[in-house]
Length: 87
Image 1 (tube, rainbow, N blue to C red):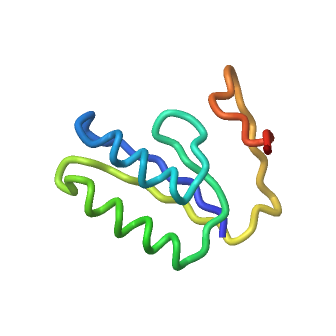
Image 2: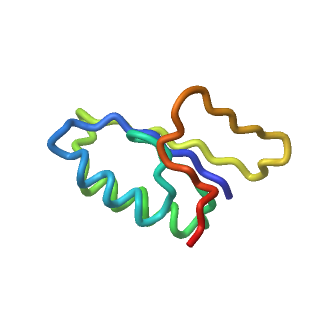
Image 3: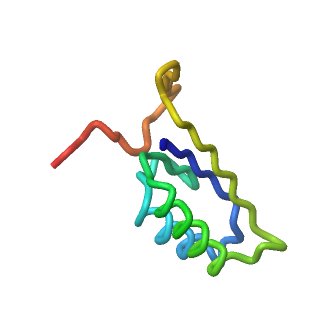
């Protein structure tokens, strides 16, 4: 499945959240990640994030898409992380 994850986390925990999210998804821009992920890995990601966050103060929103058939990605302004570059 294709997932987009965004978070609003207290600055004390931003680095921890960033580290967890980068293990599973591609960083797109500040506090935004996207990419293909299995249901099992998404479950692990959610668990790891919940261990790092204060669930009474921080917020994470996860959008899951089964198909990107009719989707389109458009960027206005500077692209923070070009996902087209592969090494």
